Image 1 (cartoon, one colour):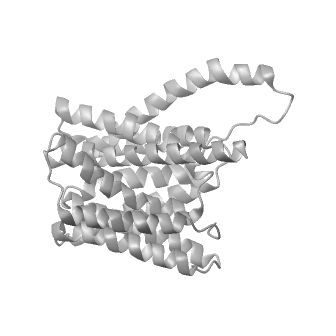
Image 2 (image 1 turned 180 degrees about the vertical axis):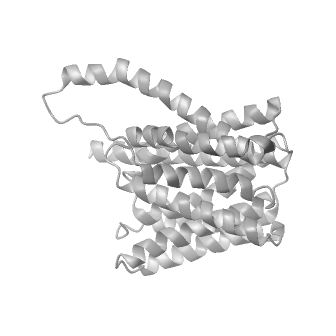
Length: 299
């Protein structure tokens, strides 16, 4: 009983901090790209490289201070570590790259709507294609969450360009598959670290291609580093840990909280206003999420 309660609270806090990191990523990206402090390609390169460097330091500390102690206390069980996969590294790289370039033409609200709607559709379609039918509670909860999400963003949504729309859809599909891969991870910490490491060849090749388009500022580089270290590397570590305990559709639906959190962050850090529509839509989103989470039949 105590162990179950501990795991529940652990999953809750891991998920909460991961979603906060995702919202912070939107803020850092808005500050850097919205104000043209850095080009989208360089933002992506710095974001992934800084995330990889942070995770390299994390891995070193983990190896020398924690793994050795665990090995000394082990009883001969298999301690083989996962090293991620090239496919998941591709999903991660494509997500980050298309995310940045889409935001050159899309405003924040439109980009978030396209991204998370695509994530929802992709994750639910993969479940349906595997032969799982949506329960009534799941369907109602999803409809409520998406309706609240659209209500929140609709007043700000502008017509996106076709190319930017396609780029953000690609980003959403990539993030959905990266999330689905995390559900199967038996060693989420190592998978996250090595997935980042495996993006290095793609980063180098793209940096060479993007060299002539590079423009940087101190603020832009700082925002990209904060995005890479705090909002990406640390956030994805927590997210992959949380995914091992989250049900499939809960993992899909709770991500609809990110735009709400980003709006709150925008109010606090960027002086953006909070309207009555925001309060109402937030309550609808939370109601839909709670309906899905509280349904014990969903896996």
